[in-house]
Amino acid sequence: MGTQRKLRQFEFDPKRLKELIVYVAAKAHDDPTFGAIKLNKILYYADFAAYRQLGKPITGAAYYKLREGPAPRQLLAARDELIEQGRLQVEERPYFTYTQKRLVLSEGCEPDPEFLRPEEQALVDKVIDFFRGMSAREVSDYSHREPGWILAEDRADIPYESAWLSAEPIDQETEEAALRIGAELLARRG
Image (cartoon, rainbow, N blue to C red; front, top):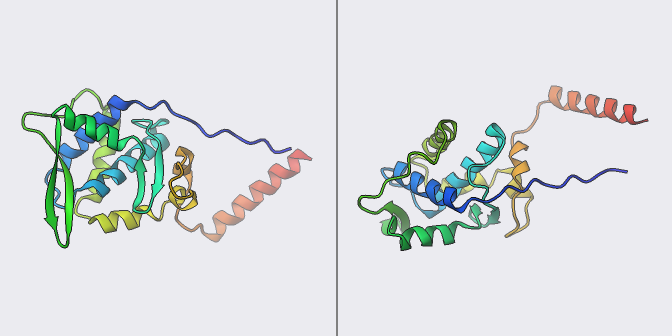
């Protein structure tokens, strides 16, 4: 008798993903810890926060579960196209015992100032600032607390609806209220 709800699918906009990548690379250029893993997490958190706060993601990209945390499925194609167009380049830098792969703007390239609405830009800036200075390991570990990442199978898509789930434990008062509401709803069904 229960009905299964279909998860929302958003139309993927490859141009918005590419512009978001360029924007993030420009805004994070002075963060010495900015690399590929951090880029993945910034894109994920920006899209999922936009869905939660604005009703739809910025790019509509499909995010999936990787060992290091969520990543957009379409990232490599978008990145490669931006490199081919000469807008971005990959810069490899030593970072402790690793080689950090950073996307940097090519000379003379700037993000398109028109692609983000002001509320989207504020949201993306907040995500970038939150992760500024965190290492790839710290950002990855942080993303491993996301319920959507936890619940997804390896390499499976993470539904945007998981943005509504909380990783924080609920207090007893909230739990009792939820149980009371659930009992009332079941009683109404008869």
